[in-house]
Image (cartoon, rainbow, N blue to C red; front, side):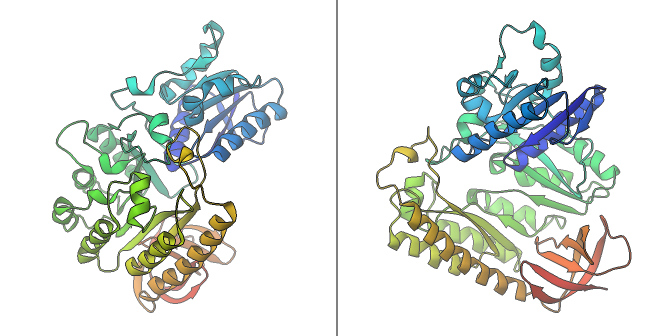
Length: 429
């Protein structure tokens, strides 16, 4: 049996697409092995968010060839889409596949001897419809990610992804329903809707939006939680208020991508909203979900960011009381407008600002957790680590609890009694 090894870099969308490609190989009689093992085919699903992502992709491609010099090596995904000519210079690669035809990867590899060259990269903007890929089994996971759309029309000044993924393309709601139903039948209790820009779901097809979709899949038996991936603040509107009240399975956890608490920085980022507009959307969420977990991403050291602008971000984070903040130091990405902006911030300043914001975030997160002290709350348990079972509340609070029973994929009521680092400690009721 031919052995195939995968390595995935980057986001949840890449991980989902890797799982879908793995299923294609399994259905065609291939054996899937770990990337460190001896395989006949090595496939690297690449990422190109930063120059470092490109470097890691190249390293993994070469690693596969070192493990087995006779192996067939495939580079697929965003880096392949953006810079196929760079990858062509790597002799270790046999085929380069962009972000089109991932759903035909087995066929492409089998047809390789007939291909005139090893490039299988096409104009992503020529793709107008969503390319269907589905996952029947989520390997070694409790939470099932469901890809609902691809592409992005935002063109933030620091981001290369629209060039790698093309314009927005929404997945047919009935195909999403069937995939969720299939996973529910197999025992999955929580699904996470993900994509490149899920707030835009439905804008390119019929009169349907993200929260209409959630309402559509809400009554599937077995699914107890529906979680949404990263959102843009513009989706929080009157329709959200109307629907959110009627979908109890919707997790009160909203990751709203902020990037900066300074309106002037947001303008340079081409984010299309002000800090005050973002703040208003968080108020709407908390009117419906008073204890909602609102998490975000923030980039420090964006070109031209002054001490005053950084302080605006610090003040904003404290005002909003995010339950968690993912802090990133700005990384120059060639091919974006931000890469050629004046007043690039020194790396030492980025590091200092990152450390300050992370410390501030930890204090805010602790305050958020304290709201749940001595409260009983449902936890979906996922794995055991030493003597503790680990799980998450619907707000995505990490919880540890002891039990003699196997709690894998079980939802239990837990009394939360302590906070230790990034976890709350609880006793199962």
